[in-house]
Image (cartoon, rainbow, N blue to C red; front, side, top):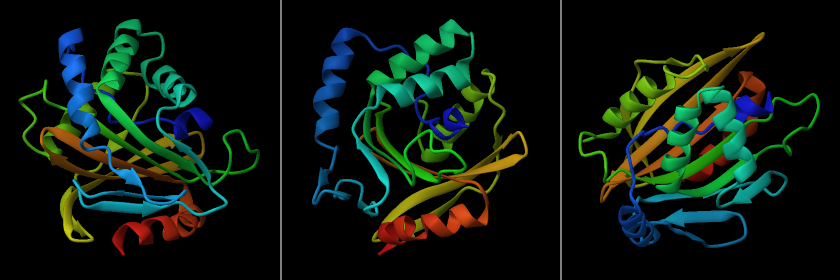
Length: 216
């Protein structure tokens, strides 16, 4: 269960990244990383985004190797080529945060969560829009062992004064239906990607303060 909730779907652009490219990526990405304005409030003026994580939530800032490994194992299974591609994609990405209502492994909890990543897509010139990006994500996930139903419901929405692309997916896992909502925006060949995961109405209610902080 925890493996499913840890999956980040934006780390799936299987393009190569040389050492010279990586140095450039790291340098340009930092300009778009945003900042923590308090212990639990993050804002990014470059993308026009802000979010506040409630006090009782389990918050991790920056990269979390354990979550990356869990997500990689779930999506790629025994496909070593896909695992290697995921690691390459992770090098092009800046993990902003992972926030779970409860610590991973808490028994008897479905654990709604939000995860945010900024990825450099400069090495993928064919991606012209967030919709293109999601099509690539869908295509690459279909090659793995995780079965995700991407909905044909993409639309532009306003978050604060900024326009983001919103779309959704669902995953049937045992007797549960996991819902994911994605918000994304491209600036200077970097994509800002928000992934919100819930299971059922109770989770959606728990997630309301987090989503409200985005739209205020």
